Image (tube, rainbow, N blue to C red; front, side, top):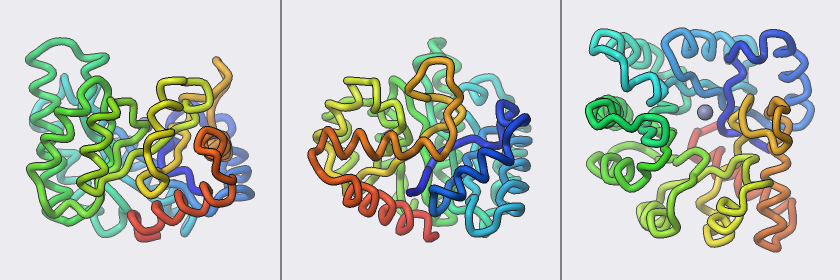
Length: 252
Ligand SMILES: [Zn+2]
């Protein structure tokens, strides 16, 4: 099993990070930790260095924060990522979030910043991990302007089936989080998406199926289980196919 998207650097894990990593090591082949800020990216690299061949780093900049960031702050993160480009498996999470950000100027700012991260991924031919809420079609159109990004992953995909089909036509991927356990929208959506286009993730510490519980990478089996159930495919095949997708994309 691979958890392709989590945030073990977040302070939510300050009290139990070591145990969480220990439990993850017992169950998972590897995991990808996604940085969301300048400091978060530093902590992500540190976690990866402390857990070689297990925690792989992806460095990014969260779109909710990006709406208010000035150019020098954005440049600082772009420069940071360029500096570590050979050490990371992907750029992300980056993207757009129109669920939290309603203001038009801020939304344009998000899209503008997202393009700059896409451009960086394009320049270095890296995969990109996209956070997107209520703007999947817009994010898809932006990403389509670049032709050298090695792979595109819509993390915790929640868009329409119509956009999902376009995503697949372009050979991009969507990841199913543990949210699929309780979200009928996600169940209906992922029932229609072939396993060849699916990755699995927890988005820890978020999205635990039990409200109020903190999610952790070892819970990724919940997503795999649910995918197996809704697709009427055995657990082992779901695990094998989604894990191979991740290995191929992130070259791990
Ligand atoms: Zn995330």
